[in-house]
Length: 195
Image (cartoon, rainbow, N blue to C red):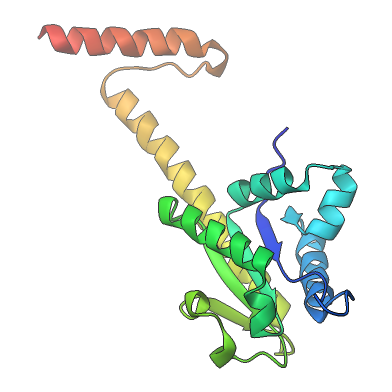
């Protein structure tokens, strides 16, 4: 079953030494809550995995990474931003972004982390700093604009296809009869080859 995640939030969940939840988790939850309250489908592992009741959390994380169009790395320390899972998720998404330019990666940092503490792979992406005025509104606006831009590209691609079909004389608008539509396209191609 496809979940249609729009946003994936990555963060260091617990400290390796103290085993306590990190400030990163608390901040990531604040970002998750803000975005999901505004209608975005956000993958936030503590909430999402629990709600799904999944034991195969690794598979669900992979699915969420593949589906999401936006990735947000949350961090308060360079060490946390480079933690094993945060690094794996981030580099996986960077790899997906290379193949699919419609994806976006943002950083969301909080004190004591500063811009100069960012990992090298994050130094050329948009960074949002917790505590700045309207930071969550601004992040949400960036995400909505990005998702709307992606939707518009798909919309325009569909209209281009319709325009091409109209220009070659194919006038089927009955979406319930797609097989007939495909057969007409095949016939048109065969006719073009005979000329």
